[in-house]
Image (cartoon, rainbow, N blue to C red):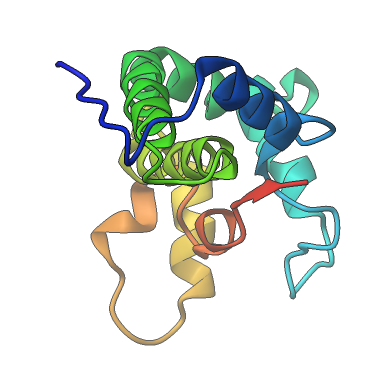
Length: 164
């Protein structure tokens, strides 16, 4: 892809680099669950549930269901392309330097949500499925009843991407 520069949109490279460095100074992009996000029925931190899902808990016979580690492997190349295309837009003057980090965080959060919603292994224990069915007392039991990490939807809906 060629970059066309005219006098109208020309900004010296040293100025662009300085703007990008200052835009990223003291800023961090974070994807995950904020501490105040809790399950309404139990008050348990959503972040702690996500940590158990990520690494498992042998004492409770919960196998690991990697959320972040697997998403990083699955989406690494896409995220690199997002950074590259965002940087090009910043260099062309189409976007402010802050755009690069903000876009990356939003894309990563969406991809982590997508990974959670498509995760199916390891399968849930039959006892977990039966507990879910018994909680649903009335109404339809959906196909997602046997799907890991999506029973209440809270893990998905409380996942955030922020730039601090």
